[in-house]
Image 1 (cartoon, one colour):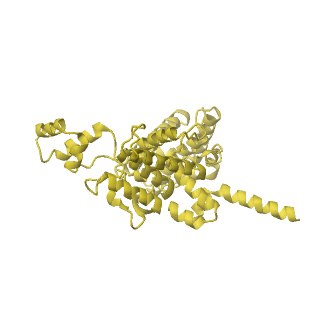
Image 2 (cartoon, rainbow, N blue to C red):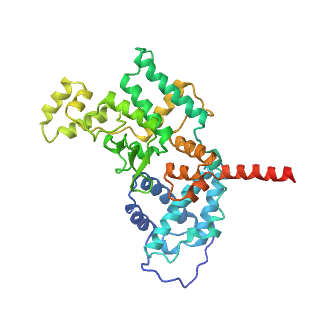
Length: 381
């Protein structure tokens, strides 16, 4: 344990004696994104416990740069001992930095001690970017071709896969949307911990206009581009599925208990409990949903990942022992556009706030191109 030496005089702040735990609670209550709130809460609780145990700090005003520097070093040690991934260590520290930045903005601290360079210098090297998965052009073509053949088999009456016509069209539309539009999984599928991310509904889809209304990473509604092949797959799926209402999710859940719960809640204001149970007992759940225009939940982000895992297994695609993950489709699209010299198009397709973000995301491509140009110059000299 390190022994502390503290200055007797501290800069004035608007509040004194604020405990870390109460400040963390205030910060978490200000966060709208449910997933982020849950993950940040867990990380910040562990950080507060570490501060109390190792640095004898329990008050917000007592957190100093040296505490953040020691915490960064603690995370680096955990990475070295294979207790954490480097990307996770950086994520944990980012939660702390964001929390203390909030406290600074709320005038509970005079400055953010976690944002000081000498504190962050102790963080481990982040090697995550080099290992991030993205769909290569070949992988994209392979999964799209498989989805087309899957639909063709169903139309020919081949039921060996045990896949219905509606399911085949739905899955193809889902894969094409991921592969070609650049959307994030949490923008089109349901994020259970975030009430503002219920998944896209049919009213969010503009097939003729080639756009898709999504709740973006910015926590604001945005319009994602919808290329022709993705729009065609959605249009054909819509024709086969014929959703009962525009409010119905584009990719509804297959989870039966969720459907029954939605029906019971949806009919509660019009029918007695016994009448609702009679309706459910005498009819197929999907028929009830359609007849009474019940809006059931969308497939979750986890459900979408599990679906992609199954589809890759059926297609015989092995991506370094894994599968084509939903977010890898977005990276793959950006990678191809950027590598082919369309940086501005990549920015627009991925809805990056600035071209600088796009350049940073694909800095490996820029480095490779620079190397080739340097080689050309040296070869000519």
